[in-house]
Length: 196
Image (cartoon, rainbow, N blue to C red; front, side, top):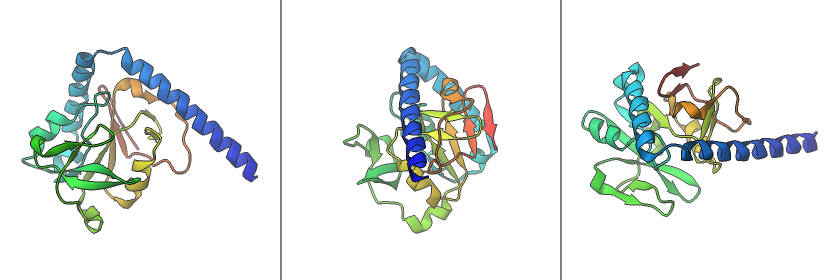
């Protein structure tokens, strides 16, 4: 039985690896300008959601070049909402408050991260909404990340709704998923919102 489970897990790991490569190839077929335009469409859809409009404390992410661009969106809303951004600390994500573009520092992973104090874990219940990046998603709200498990370890600690934002081409009917993968409550892309 254990051997069958191990074989199944290995198969899922292999399927995820292939799907990640496929999504990378699709993304590379778009120019940075095209991805930026698509990002603006995704963000416009996100801004219309009631859950975002009502949220006061938002855990978001500061996008890398191949993700839905969140930089301008955070800058635009950070006067009305408090944004928290994740930062890699050993093998875990810790949260820090976003203050300004100038208070960001590029990490060893090439990700811009906020300077300043860590947002305490005992205050995670103050978070109203979590905006989650990912490589691929499916119509049953599964999420596949980059394979390090950072979000799968962080998200169970937070009760707030989990909203993935992505490009349309990152959504599939079914993606490989195992028990440790945390499902989303909502997926927002350019042309649709998928909810549970």
